[in-house]
Image 1 (cartoon, helix red, strand yellow):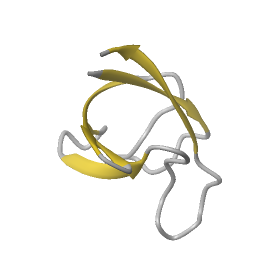
Image 2: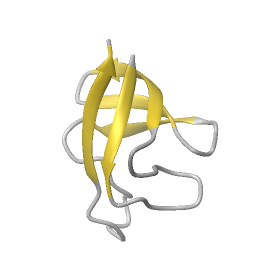
Image 3: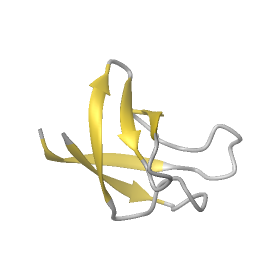
Amino acid sequence: MKLKYIGESFGVDSLTNGKIYEATDEGDFYRVIDDSGEDYLYSRINPRPLDGSSPGGRWEIVEE
């Protein structure tokens, strides 16, 4: 599936506002290939850094 991240960009290798990412559904999380090129689990509801340094954002499904 493809997801568009909408929210504050965070980290050099994490998520960028307006960018579309490849992802798979993992229940309460999406497994997303982020800007680092690696896959990580991000919340379906409010993807954000674990350290709380950004308020995060939301996902928009582009393609299922």
